[in-house]
Length: 341
Image (cartoon, rainbow, N blue to C red; front, side, top):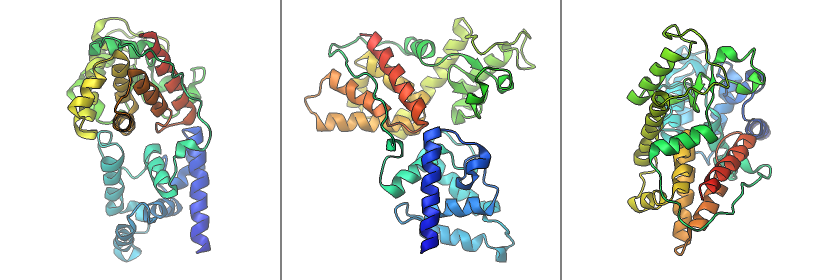
Protein backbone atom coordinates (compact mmCIF):
# COMPACT_ATOMS: atom_id res chain seq x y z
CA UNK A 1 0.00 0.00 0.00
CA UNK A 2 2.80 2.40 0.87
CA UNK A 3 4.44 1.82 -2.49
CA UNK A 4 1.26 2.76 -4.34
CA UNK A 5 0.94 5.96 -2.36
CA UNK A 6 4.53 6.89 -3.13
CA UNK A 7 4.05 6.27 -6.83
CA UNK A 8 0.92 8.37 -6.88
CA UNK A 9 2.63 11.23 -5.02
CA UNK A 10 5.52 11.13 -7.48
CA UNK A 11 3.04 11.45 -10.32
CA UNK A 12 1.28 14.36 -8.64
CA UNK A 13 4.54 16.25 -8.08
CA UNK A 14 5.75 15.59 -11.61
CA UNK A 15 2.44 16.63 -13.13
CA UNK A 16 2.26 19.85 -11.14
CA UNK A 17 5.71 20.79 -12.36
CA UNK A 18 4.89 19.73 -15.90
CA UNK A 19 1.73 21.81 -16.02
CA UNK A 20 3.39 24.81 -14.39
CA UNK A 21 6.30 24.84 -16.84
CA UNK A 22 4.28 23.80 -19.85
CA UNK A 23 6.94 21.76 -21.58
CA UNK A 24 9.55 19.66 -19.79
CA UNK A 25 12.91 18.30 -20.78
CA UNK A 26 12.64 14.72 -21.97
CA UNK A 27 15.18 13.45 -19.47
CA UNK A 28 13.41 15.04 -16.51
CA UNK A 29 9.89 13.69 -16.85
CA UNK A 30 10.07 10.73 -19.16
CA UNK A 31 8.52 8.77 -16.31
CA UNK A 32 5.09 10.23 -17.04
CA UNK A 33 5.27 9.63 -20.75
CA UNK A 34 5.91 13.04 -22.29
CA UNK A 35 8.57 12.83 -24.96
CA UNK A 36 8.46 9.07 -25.35
CA UNK A 37 7.98 5.92 -23.33
CA UNK A 38 11.30 4.12 -23.41
CA UNK A 39 11.80 2.64 -19.95
CA UNK A 40 9.82 0.10 -17.89
CA UNK A 41 9.36 2.72 -15.16
CA UNK A 42 7.73 5.07 -17.68
CA UNK A 43 5.10 2.46 -18.44
CA UNK A 44 4.62 1.69 -14.74
CA UNK A 45 3.66 5.28 -14.01
CA UNK A 46 1.29 5.47 -16.97
CA UNK A 47 -0.38 2.19 -16.01
CA UNK A 48 -0.78 3.52 -12.46
CA UNK A 49 -2.62 6.55 -13.80
CA UNK A 50 -5.00 4.49 -15.91
CA UNK A 51 -5.54 1.93 -13.13
CA UNK A 52 -6.83 4.54 -10.70
CA UNK A 53 -10.50 3.79 -9.84
CA UNK A 54 -11.52 7.34 -10.80
CA UNK A 55 -10.15 6.88 -14.31
CA UNK A 56 -11.82 3.49 -14.62
CA UNK A 57 -9.56 1.32 -16.72
CA UNK A 58 -8.23 -1.03 -14.02
CA UNK A 59 -9.71 -4.20 -15.60
CA UNK A 60 -8.44 -3.34 -19.06
CA UNK A 61 -4.98 -2.54 -17.71
CA UNK A 62 -4.84 -5.94 -15.99
CA UNK A 63 -5.67 -7.63 -19.30
CA UNK A 64 -2.93 -5.63 -21.01
CA UNK A 65 -0.41 -6.65 -18.34
CA UNK A 66 -1.24 -10.32 -18.87
CA UNK A 67 -1.20 -10.20 -22.66
CA UNK A 68 1.98 -8.09 -22.76
CA UNK A 69 3.88 -10.23 -20.24
CA UNK A 70 7.24 -12.02 -20.63
CA UNK A 71 5.25 -15.24 -21.05
CA UNK A 72 4.15 -13.83 -24.40
CA UNK A 73 7.69 -12.81 -25.33
CA UNK A 74 7.41 -9.17 -24.29
CA UNK A 75 10.28 -7.85 -22.20
CA UNK A 76 8.61 -4.45 -21.88
CA UNK A 77 4.91 -3.61 -21.93
CA UNK A 78 5.66 -0.45 -23.86
CA UNK A 79 6.64 -2.57 -26.87
CA UNK A 80 3.30 -4.37 -26.89
CA UNK A 81 0.85 -3.40 -29.63
CA UNK A 82 -2.16 -3.88 -27.35
CA UNK A 83 -0.76 -1.29 -24.92
CA UNK A 84 0.03 1.10 -27.77
CA UNK A 85 -3.46 0.70 -29.24
CA UNK A 86 -5.05 1.35 -25.85
CA UNK A 87 -3.14 4.62 -25.30
CA UNK A 88 -3.78 5.77 -28.86
CA UNK A 89 -7.50 4.98 -28.66
CA UNK A 90 -7.87 6.87 -25.36
CA UNK A 91 -6.14 9.95 -26.77
CA UNK A 92 -8.13 9.98 -29.98
CA UNK A 93 -11.52 9.44 -28.35
CA UNK A 94 -11.20 11.18 -25.00
CA UNK A 95 -8.75 14.04 -25.45
CA UNK A 96 -8.42 15.41 -28.98
CA UNK A 97 -10.50 13.39 -31.42
CA UNK A 98 -9.35 15.61 -34.31
CA UNK A 99 -5.70 15.76 -33.34
CA UNK A 100 -4.27 12.25 -33.64
CA UNK A 101 -3.47 10.28 -36.75
CA UNK A 102 -1.64 7.35 -35.16
CA UNK A 103 -1.43 5.31 -31.96
CA UNK A 104 1.73 6.71 -30.45
CA UNK A 105 2.32 5.79 -26.82
CA UNK A 106 3.64 9.13 -25.62
CA UNK A 107 0.68 10.77 -23.87
CA UNK A 108 0.81 14.51 -24.44
CA UNK A 109 0.30 17.28 -21.88
CA UNK A 110 -3.45 17.44 -22.51
CA UNK A 111 -3.87 13.71 -21.89
CA UNK A 112 -1.83 13.82 -18.69
CA UNK A 113 -3.73 16.89 -17.50
CA UNK A 114 -7.07 15.20 -18.08
CA UNK A 115 -6.00 12.14 -16.10
CA UNK A 116 -4.59 14.31 -13.33
CA UNK A 117 -7.87 16.25 -13.01
CA UNK A 118 -9.89 13.04 -12.99
CA UNK A 119 -7.79 11.36 -10.29
CA UNK A 120 -7.42 14.32 -7.95
CA UNK A 121 -10.87 15.82 -8.50
CA UNK A 122 -9.41 19.26 -9.10
CA UNK A 123 -8.37 21.58 -11.89
CA UNK A 124 -4.72 20.99 -12.67
CA UNK A 125 -4.46 24.57 -13.84
CA UNK A 126 -5.62 25.90 -10.46
CA UNK A 127 -2.48 25.13 -8.48
CA UNK A 128 -1.61 28.82 -8.62
CA UNK A 129 -3.80 31.85 -9.00
CA UNK A 130 -4.10 32.72 -12.68
CA UNK A 131 -4.23 36.43 -13.53
CA UNK A 132 -7.63 37.14 -15.02
CA UNK A 133 -7.99 38.88 -18.33
CA UNK A 134 -9.78 42.20 -18.42
CA UNK A 135 -13.51 41.53 -18.29
CA UNK A 136 -15.06 44.97 -18.77
CA UNK A 137 -17.06 44.69 -21.97
CA UNK A 138 -19.72 46.76 -23.62
CA UNK A 139 -23.19 45.24 -23.68
CA UNK A 140 -23.82 46.78 -27.09
CA UNK A 141 -23.78 44.21 -29.88
CA UNK A 142 -20.80 44.37 -32.27
CA UNK A 143 -21.90 43.45 -35.80
CA UNK A 144 -20.64 40.03 -36.93
CA UNK A 145 -17.75 39.70 -39.37
CA UNK A 146 -16.90 37.22 -42.12
CA UNK A 147 -14.44 34.39 -41.50
CA UNK A 148 -11.57 35.89 -43.53
CA UNK A 149 -11.77 39.15 -41.56
CA UNK A 150 -11.75 37.23 -38.28
CA UNK A 151 -8.79 35.13 -39.43
CA UNK A 152 -6.80 38.25 -40.31
CA UNK A 153 -7.55 39.73 -36.87
CA UNK A 154 -6.25 36.55 -35.23
CA UNK A 155 -3.15 36.43 -37.42
CA UNK A 156 -2.31 40.09 -36.86
CA UNK A 157 -3.14 40.35 -33.16
CA UNK A 158 -2.77 36.85 -31.72
CA UNK A 159 -0.61 34.75 -34.02
CA UNK A 160 1.47 35.50 -37.10
CA UNK A 161 5.16 34.99 -37.71
CA UNK A 162 7.09 32.18 -39.36
CA UNK A 163 9.26 29.65 -37.58
CA UNK A 164 11.33 26.76 -38.87
CA UNK A 165 13.05 24.34 -36.43
CA UNK A 166 16.39 25.02 -38.17
CA UNK A 167 16.15 28.58 -36.80
CA UNK A 168 16.17 27.38 -33.21
CA UNK A 169 19.93 27.48 -32.55
CA UNK A 170 20.48 30.95 -33.97
CA UNK A 171 17.17 32.55 -32.99
CA UNK A 172 17.16 34.69 -29.86
CA UNK A 173 14.86 32.93 -27.42
CA UNK A 174 14.80 29.90 -29.69
CA UNK A 175 14.88 27.57 -26.70
CA UNK A 176 11.35 28.77 -25.90
CA UNK A 177 10.10 27.17 -29.11
CA UNK A 178 10.66 23.75 -27.46
CA UNK A 179 9.37 21.02 -29.78
CA UNK A 180 7.50 23.29 -32.20
CA UNK A 181 7.47 22.26 -35.79
CA UNK A 182 7.49 24.56 -38.78
CA UNK A 183 4.84 27.14 -37.95
CA UNK A 184 3.07 29.97 -39.75
CA UNK A 185 0.06 31.96 -38.55
CA UNK A 186 -0.10 29.69 -35.51
CA UNK A 187 -0.51 26.56 -37.65
CA UNK A 188 2.10 23.98 -36.61
CA UNK A 189 3.21 21.51 -39.24
CA UNK A 190 4.44 18.97 -36.68
CA UNK A 191 1.73 19.18 -34.04
CA UNK A 192 -1.27 20.32 -36.09
CA UNK A 193 -2.70 16.79 -36.31
CA UNK A 194 -5.38 16.25 -38.90
CA UNK A 195 -5.55 19.97 -39.64
CA UNK A 196 -2.45 19.43 -41.77
CA UNK A 197 -3.78 16.41 -43.66
CA UNK A 198 -7.10 17.90 -44.76
CA UNK A 199 -7.24 19.19 -48.36
CA UNK A 200 -7.06 22.70 -46.89
CA UNK A 201 -4.02 21.83 -44.78
CA UNK A 202 -2.19 20.20 -47.68
CA UNK A 203 -2.86 23.25 -49.87
CA UNK A 204 -1.61 25.59 -47.15
CA UNK A 205 1.70 23.79 -46.62
CA UNK A 206 2.19 23.35 -50.34
CA UNK A 207 1.97 27.14 -50.68
CA UNK A 208 4.41 27.59 -47.79
CA UNK A 209 6.89 25.18 -49.40
CA UNK A 210 6.79 27.09 -52.66
CA UNK A 211 7.57 30.40 -50.96
CA UNK A 212 9.40 29.95 -47.65
CA UNK A 213 12.91 29.40 -48.99
CA UNK A 214 13.35 26.63 -46.41
CA UNK A 215 12.00 23.93 -48.72
CA UNK A 216 13.69 22.50 -51.83
CA UNK A 217 10.38 23.26 -53.56
CA UNK A 218 10.78 27.01 -53.04
CA UNK A 219 11.27 28.99 -56.23
CA UNK A 220 12.85 31.87 -54.31
CA UNK A 221 15.70 30.54 -52.14
CA UNK A 222 15.84 33.62 -49.87
CA UNK A 223 14.61 32.35 -46.52
CA UNK A 224 11.72 33.80 -44.54
CA UNK A 225 12.77 35.02 -41.10
CA UNK A 226 11.00 34.69 -37.78
CA UNK A 227 9.64 38.23 -37.99
CA UNK A 228 8.63 37.90 -41.60
CA UNK A 229 4.87 37.58 -42.01
CA UNK A 230 4.19 36.97 -45.70
CA UNK A 231 1.99 39.55 -47.34
CA UNK A 232 -0.71 38.89 -49.88
CA UNK A 233 -4.00 37.06 -49.94
CA UNK A 234 -2.91 33.58 -51.05
CA UNK A 235 -1.33 32.38 -47.80
CA UNK A 236 -3.80 34.14 -45.55
CA UNK A 237 -6.73 32.74 -47.50
CA UNK A 238 -5.16 29.28 -47.33
CA UNK A 239 -4.75 29.66 -43.55
CA UNK A 240 -8.35 30.82 -43.23
CA UNK A 241 -9.48 27.70 -45.08
CA UNK A 242 -7.45 25.42 -42.77
CA UNK A 243 -8.88 26.92 -39.61
CA UNK A 244 -12.44 27.11 -40.95
CA UNK A 245 -12.26 23.36 -41.63
CA UNK A 246 -10.98 22.84 -38.06
CA UNK A 247 -13.73 25.05 -36.64
CA UNK A 248 -16.43 23.21 -38.57
CA UNK A 249 -15.04 19.84 -37.48
CA UNK A 250 -15.11 20.91 -33.83
CA UNK A 251 -18.58 22.34 -34.24
CA UNK A 252 -20.05 19.22 -35.82
CA UNK A 253 -18.06 16.40 -34.26
CA UNK A 254 -16.60 17.59 -30.96
CA UNK A 255 -19.35 19.68 -29.37
CA UNK A 256 -22.25 19.00 -31.78
CA UNK A 257 -23.10 22.67 -31.57
CA UNK A 258 -26.73 23.55 -30.92
CA UNK A 259 -28.26 25.83 -33.57
CA UNK A 260 -29.44 28.35 -30.96
CA UNK A 261 -25.97 28.52 -29.43
CA UNK A 262 -24.43 28.94 -32.86
CA UNK A 263 -26.82 31.82 -33.58
CA UNK A 264 -25.74 33.53 -30.35
CA UNK A 265 -22.05 33.13 -31.24
CA UNK A 266 -22.60 34.52 -34.71
CA UNK A 267 -24.60 37.48 -33.44
CA UNK A 268 -21.55 39.35 -32.14
CA UNK A 269 -18.05 39.66 -33.65
CA UNK A 270 -16.44 39.35 -30.21
CA UNK A 271 -17.90 35.90 -29.59
CA UNK A 272 -17.02 34.97 -33.16
CA UNK A 273 -13.35 35.80 -32.55
CA UNK A 274 -13.42 33.99 -29.20
CA UNK A 275 -14.64 30.74 -30.77
CA UNK A 276 -12.67 31.10 -34.00
CA UNK A 277 -9.51 31.29 -31.92
CA UNK A 278 -10.80 28.22 -30.11
CA UNK A 279 -10.06 26.33 -33.32
CA UNK A 280 -6.40 27.37 -32.94
CA UNK A 281 -6.49 26.30 -29.27
CA UNK A 282 -7.35 22.67 -30.12
CA UNK A 283 -10.41 20.46 -29.95
CA UNK A 284 -10.20 19.83 -26.20
CA UNK A 285 -10.02 23.53 -25.42
CA UNK A 286 -12.76 24.30 -27.93
CA UNK A 287 -14.99 21.99 -25.93
CA UNK A 288 -14.08 23.76 -22.67
CA UNK A 289 -15.07 27.11 -24.19
CA UNK A 290 -18.30 25.73 -25.61
CA UNK A 291 -19.36 23.97 -22.42
CA UNK A 292 -18.72 27.15 -20.44
CA UNK A 293 -20.97 29.16 -22.77
CA UNK A 294 -23.74 26.55 -22.68
CA UNK A 295 -23.66 26.33 -18.89
CA UNK A 296 -23.66 30.08 -18.47
CA UNK A 297 -26.71 30.49 -20.71
CA UNK A 298 -28.48 27.62 -18.93
CA UNK A 299 -27.83 29.13 -15.48
CA UNK A 300 -28.51 32.71 -16.54
CA UNK A 301 -31.65 32.79 -18.71
CA UNK A 302 -31.63 36.60 -18.60
CA UNK A 303 -28.01 36.80 -19.72
CA UNK A 304 -26.50 39.87 -21.34
CA UNK A 305 -23.79 39.98 -23.98
CA UNK A 306 -21.52 41.58 -21.40
CA UNK A 307 -22.09 38.63 -19.08
CA UNK A 308 -21.42 36.13 -21.86
CA UNK A 309 -18.12 37.80 -22.70
CA UNK A 310 -17.04 38.03 -19.08
CA UNK A 311 -17.67 34.31 -18.61
CA UNK A 312 -15.95 33.56 -21.93
CA UNK A 313 -12.75 35.27 -20.84
CA UNK A 314 -12.79 33.50 -17.48
CA UNK A 315 -13.14 30.21 -19.37
CA UNK A 316 -10.01 31.10 -21.32
CA UNK A 317 -7.98 31.14 -18.10
CA UNK A 318 -9.00 27.50 -17.54
CA UNK A 319 -7.77 26.12 -20.85
CA UNK A 320 -5.37 23.20 -20.98
CA UNK A 321 -1.78 24.28 -21.50
CA UNK A 322 1.18 25.99 -19.87
CA UNK A 323 -0.21 28.32 -17.19
CA UNK A 324 1.78 31.36 -18.24
CA UNK A 325 0.88 30.88 -21.90
CA UNK A 326 -2.81 30.37 -21.08
CA UNK A 327 -2.97 33.54 -18.98
CA UNK A 328 -1.10 35.54 -21.62
CA UNK A 329 -3.38 34.26 -24.38
CA UNK A 330 -6.53 35.10 -22.38
CA UNK A 331 -5.27 38.65 -21.89
CA UNK A 332 -4.49 39.08 -25.59
CA UNK A 333 -7.90 37.75 -26.68
CA UNK A 334 -9.61 40.04 -24.17
CA UNK A 335 -7.74 43.06 -25.50
CA UNK A 336 -8.57 42.13 -29.08
CA UNK A 337 -12.31 41.71 -28.59
CA UNK A 338 -12.43 44.89 -26.49
CA UNK A 339 -10.92 46.78 -29.42
CA UNK A 340 -13.84 45.70 -31.62
CA UNK A 341 -16.43 47.58 -29.54
